[in-house]
Image (cartoon, rainbow, N blue to C red; front, top):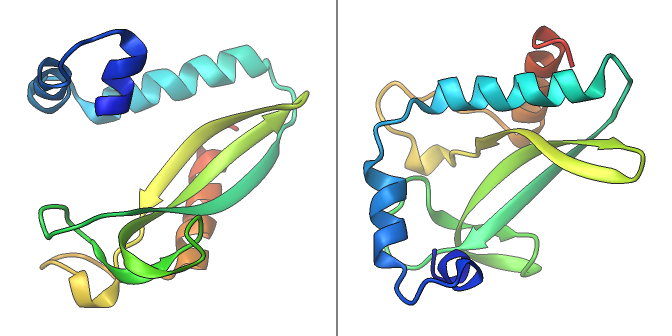
Length: 133
């Protein structure tokens, strides 16, 4: 959040943090709007899909699904959170489409279903097809 605030020219990231965490928006509505904009821009053109796993190191236990796991950008096992991301590629431009957080088995909460990273990737592709991408 600090880096985003810095790029925006904000002296303090606290206001941005409150905006992001307390805004009453519906994440699914915004995701669907973003997907619709992407779809409208593509105008039926085919895209290539890139599936990537990305991780961020995290300290402490304040974030869900943080565990000791392989963090690719660090090249080692560390405490962190990992997500699987589906990107689109067209005319040399890469853009994120969908993502899902990987939930390690030892971090599952009641009602969670364990899925491997390849299973998550397959689900993202199926969802993209369902969305018309």
